[in-house]
Length: 267
Image 1 (spheres, rainbow, N blue to C red):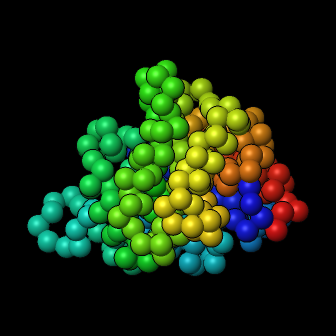
Image 2 (cartoon, rainbow, N blue to C red):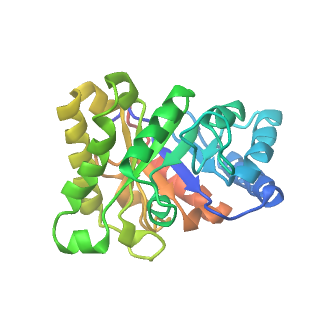
């Protein structure tokens, strides 16, 4: 990981925790990290709850002046109007959100969201002053065919070709091989590095090296305290987008502490 990029450990809660459970989780996580004297300046932590819990997280974070960040798991491409069930980027920004997940494989599969829709979501998030966490990654079939790098880079390029240099520099990209999500299987550190480097090289080609060096690239897919150190040790891996392990405050705190320790001394 480059010394200029602050690592990010982001927990995607998916459809888990009501607002009371979310409040308890945040309190426990912060207590665990405070006890460990966690340095948030050197490792950023973000939680991504369901829509119904964001306000509760906001109240707690603001009242106790907590140093964690938070965001949302999805966003509408529209700003307001007759769009039943949609939540706009401006609404999320008004709740103090810093990040919004865009293009997660579960959203692409179940809703579904296509490339054009994902580009519009990214623009909406950026326009509202937040940062999109753009998820990309191959299925097992694409990996079997040996096209995993081309596929992931292509997903990134489909979005960035419609962005300005300044917009691209504000992206966070999460490489999440679909076959690793919730499966217990995890990409090897070398595989994660290969994908992250390919994505960064594409950013440099599309824009310039400065933009490429500013963008944080996360790894996601069965991340745990058992594999975090090896993964974060790779040059182009800047943190994690965590699913299952992010539902356990003790485990998430362990991953955060390990990430901070493994990257200390850089920068």
